[in-house]
Image (cartoon, rainbow over the protein chains, first blue to last red):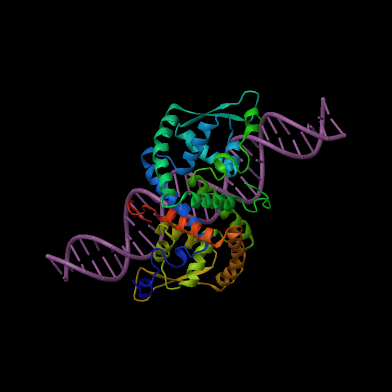
Amino acid sequence: MSKAAKVLPGEGTGKRGPDGYLGYLLRQAANGYRHRVETSLRETGLTQPQFAALTMLDAYPEHSSADLARIALLTPQTMSTILQNLENAALIRRHPHQEHGRKRRIELTDAGRQVLVRAKRLVYALEIELAEGFSEEEQLTVRRWLVAAGRRSFEEGANKP
Amino acid sequence: MSKAAKVLPGEGTGKRGPDGYLGYLLRQAANGYRHRVETSLRETGLTQPQFAALTMLDAYPEHSSADLARIALLTPQTMSTILQNLENAALIRRHPHQEHGRKRRIELTDAGRQVLVRAKRLVYALEIELAEGFSEEEQLTVRRWLVAAGRRSFEEGANKP
DNA sequence: ACAATAATATCAGAGTTCTGACAATGAGCA
DNA sequence: TGCTCATTGTCAGAACTCTGATATTATTGT
């Protein structure tokens, strides 16, 4: 290993610690958390987006793929991909929509419901971990910031996902 | 559109506002910010990870692909992919490492340096936007939280990226 | 009723990220 | 010396995410 590699900034220091750029920290935090979620969900075979989609479908069974995309701030194409994978895994089913030729009604299968129950337990444990060490007030600050970071100047893009 | 779709929770309400799950908010914030960065970087053709890699290489020209992966908390495979794309775009160059058969020395090309200068201006403007509306103290809370969210319980995984 | 516009869904292609597997090099030990 | 192990780099395959394009259906305007 070259001499330079020995001088790698340490774990929580420099640009990687609390002095780093917010955008860089945001990407790393999301990557790290997704990784933990999917490691924890390994036994269920679900990914983080699949879990989110199943949860939304369970809460709002009336919604179409396009609806879900809007809710999750994703493009319709992305949501379509996620739903295709869920359908291939037989966790959801899609029927033609009555009174609608193009829209499709989406339903969780029994397997989907069972997996979701197990997955919720696993993910909620991690969710609690995310808040550990931060006061109620600090958590509120973080939530406000995350919402703002996800939505800031979202109106100038052409393909506004 | 079905009646149910009319009752979609509004923009900043319910699970999508400050009352939502932290993990869900984190994913959306990172998605939204990445989207803004790449829209802004459109003219340069860079993606957010490519920008991050170029910035790191410019700051630490001695580092190998494996070094960069460790710094950025990514797997070696991921960093390898990003560097391949940068190399195909002729923004970096890789030479065999002296005193080392396997390691490779990575350098920005002139084109790479020029693109990086333009990209930095664009991204730093967004970085400032990320902090807007939050006090110094609040920003520190957010940074601390992001660092913790990215690193929490990172030691139990087998493939520790 | 017919044409124009909007909404829904999907295909194609690219980049990022992971897991899993593998080859080649370097370092340490019996 | 030779064996073992860690490091470095890559290939293959999958999922997610985007942009761009296209087909089908619904709504709206004249």
